[in-house]
Structure formats: structure tokens, C-alpha cells
Length: 189
Image (cartoon, rainbow, N blue to C red; front, side):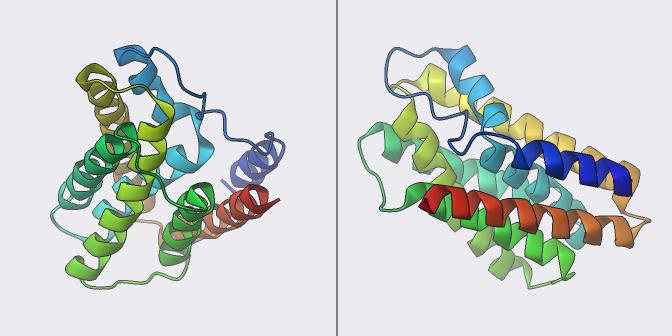
């Protein structure tokens, strides 16, 4: 597992500075929305970690991913409507750092605190998705379905590998925090 995490870190650090998911405006369809969350390293990691976090810290496994999906949708609609935020990519990358640190430090804030962090992060992730893709419910449905699948994958990873091995989840959290820090730095320069 240690060599796997090291290899993943090296691969992610070798990615170009600009996220692959942010493809610009134009005509988009369901498939574009569906694949979008898988192509941006920041989005991919955050959604996996939310699924993992839900399993490791709450008996209601689906509450945190459902919160993320809900506010992702709200943010995506806002983004499609033309709303944006200054330093949006830095904020999104910062959420990856926050999720990684929560996992690495084994922080266990209350459910409401965790859901507030997830809701705010999801809104900005959605804003980034929505700003990059054309308007339409078909694109939004694709984003939501792709994101939900990433949450399910995170849940499966936690249930299969991390529940009984807290040291692995701690290492994963450290790796995610480092990758997130790289993404923050990349978004600034």
C-alpha cells in the first residue's frame, strides 16, 4: 500500500498544472457532464474522500455523500447561470486539503459541522463544474450521476480496505493533503 500511495503521488504531481476537467464553454451533453468529475483530480479526490469519510465517521453512510450531491447540484446550477467566485480553483483545491487533513488527523467533528464543510465545498465544486459546462438538465444529471459513482467508489474503498486499518486511512489522508496542497499551489501560480 505504501508503494501504491507513493506511485499515485508521483503520478498526480506529474499532471499538468491546469485541471483536465475544465474544458471551457460550448455545447455539452449528458456524457460530458458524467465524465467531468472523473477528469479533474481535485473533484475526483474530494468525492472519493467524502464517500470514505462517510463510512469511517458516521453510521449513516449515505448522509455525507447525499449532502455533497445536493449542494453540488445547487452550485452547478448557479455556475450554469453565470455565477462564479474569485479564486474558485484555489477554493476547490483547498477543500481537498481540508478533507485530507480531516482524514489524516482522524478529526471527528460532529455530523452537522462535517456536513457544513461538505456543503460549502460541494457548492464550490458544483460552481466550477457548472461554469465550465453549458446549461441543461442533461449535463447536470451527468455531473450528479458521475459524482454519485465516485462517492460509491469511496464507500467501497473504505468498507473493503480502510475500516479495519486506520493507519491506511491516515496515510491516505496525508497523501490527499499533500496532493491538495500541490493543487492549491498550482492554482495560484
